[in-house]
Length: 295
Length: 290
Image (cartoon, rainbow over all chains, first blue to last red; front, side):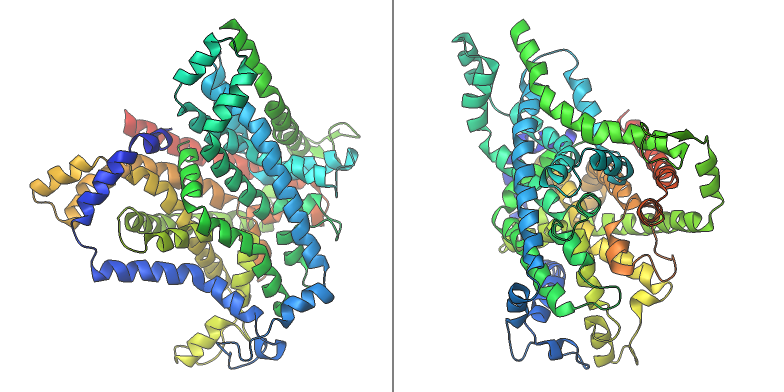
């Protein structure tokens, strides 16, 4: 709470603050630290990328060949021709993550509107309860969810994993969205209410359009969470053709050998959306995370 | 007002149904299963066994090892992540050319899937063809290749290193939010009084950042205590069970040895520990506020 609300109100202050500090010129030492951060952060991904564009012989060479020579895309083509199930895993991840995001924004958005803008007794208690339930370790769900989903024939189905992911991440989405909805000015809403608009109408035609930035932030965060989720996907999607990308790639190696040329190429394909999202939408992600962090 | 009241509760129904179905009911069932024997459901053929599973766990050396591993892992990684997180947050809180790139660099490790990230590092730690062994032997720092993930304690150290690499950035993002709430007049007042960078940090930044530090340490501790994907993909919990965490142990008990009841009790012991730590933290936060 402390952090979340403060962020919205201190935006102008932050600017003063930055200008105050920028009067002191950033030193060379500072830039070296910043450069080290950037290098350390990207070097594993760069190394995986370099591995993925080497020939198989060059990947398994000692001494290690640092730069690919020749550069080849054969590992990527081999995925298409020889192990297309890896593409299917990425497709499965895409279906699950997009559907989960849509369901969470719809159901979580309604709930957050109610918790953030409507006045009824007990809403703070409900918000705290929702957060408390989300604190349970996800692994605590596994044995029960597995036997429940087996009974309900939800194992190895898209709806099964979408329901699972929705349950895991709807609490954090409600929390972030509630904070966003609270920051929408109430004058317009009051005017519409005087004109006789219903709560659902107000939500749909006033609150939602004004909250698009918050919805985008929340949607991106939930998409990343669902795209990356591991334990639940591992247990619910046990059929080889239903696996999601993180699980499918992790289980792809046989018992003894790791085909690194395929694993690195498939990993690059899977993290590409994440790389793009964290580059293009960094403001939105940081805004959403800091709004949700003030638990 | 009454109208808004009723609508407010209707709006909650879909979300509450999902939470009840996916979180609330399964958690209750896990609790009940942990007191059972030979049962995978509380509806079909449930047999009550009292505290038998808990007693058995406390006498199982492998469980105790996984508990120790988890506690050591958490105790080492969280403080180091906090230090790095503060440093990164201080960098991000300044204005400088190229800030967008640095911000992306901090965000990216957080956004990577932990499972695949563990695989990426597994390749870099590879004994025969790995980047690290190559760099070490090329620079003469090591004479021969090291079996990082196949030896004790280097595989635990590798796991800690990867965790610190990935989650310091999450710490930084939470702390950045805290830094931005510190009013700039304080720094201006401080500079009138002749503060330097160090005293400014010690007497202005650190005390005001305290709530953010406690919150981020709490969230990270809870997270580190339930580490699962990292040992699953980086070390397989090995060598032997030297990097097996509580979560990995519970997963294996449930799905490899198909003992839902024993696994459920392992998860509950983990949960009780996490809850106790959280309560202690929250008491510390409360005391600071009073």
